[in-house]
Image (cartoon, rainbow, N blue to C red; front, side):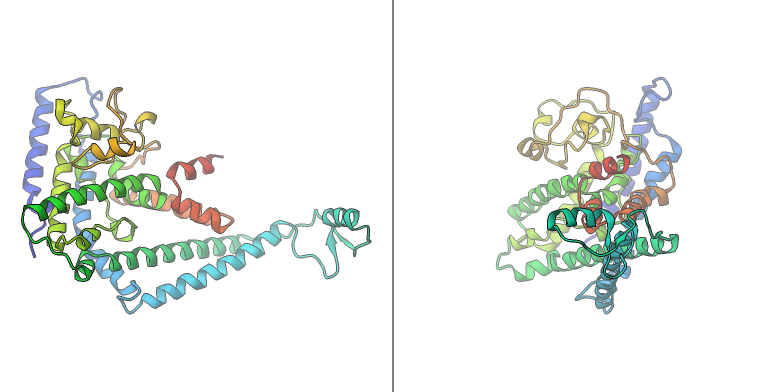
Length: 384
């Protein structure tokens, strides 16, 4: 197995951050006026998340493989848990709705408001009326139990889907099914790097347009600073995400080892664009992703939201309508910032909000909308 390029590059990462820090010291500005300046707590949080992202895949394999259907021995247990909690949640929905709307009527009775309409339409006399003001209270124990079942049902279903999808679409799995093999020559390397970059664009874009995927990716956008240390603030929960599989390249004949190397090259390229020290790069801006383009991507300004998703090439954004030029000063971070340097909070805050929304939802449509629709939809609904 070849060494991970991102691990090999760690000394270069540290050296580049040191050089950027020295540049900032030699180009001083008023304190607090340059978001690219290093701040100890923020930098340490980014480094901690970087280390966590390197460890996470090994931990995820140990934790997720045993519960992956078709792979681990507990896969069926997870499927059963999802089905059982989904059924119980549905029953709870019915009971909660009945209690909220006035309880179950007595036998041979009709609620007064419904009875009046039915009598008018049918011209007949119905049974005794039920007082529409009568309400059966929904107790706190029932509410908590019902919310817990809903969250468990959604989480277990998402886990089954994501782990099964990852297992079915791995590069190794798909390469074994392919009749093509591009070898290890220049064309194979070109296909791997260009193909990874194209698929990355769509996965990165989806990470901004689906709440579930955003809960993973939001880690990278959580800093209100923008320097080379921000590049290392990487997600730790990619094992439970859903994406266009990079393994598709294997079907085109790209060997899994080259796919992995393309991943490393892609990540290495993204490191240097996280800086304010480099402004504009002339003609390079038309083809490649640059610090200017990526500053836009990290902006919370309204005009910059969900723009410039490319990694190495910016042409994908031009082609698919997500490009935005940097013109006004960039405000980094989230539309509602985390307000913490704790790696645990940074990694989990959006998951906690997502679980809260799922728990408070009253229907399956709303639950899955909170998970799958745009983050802005969920935030807007919560405010409304």
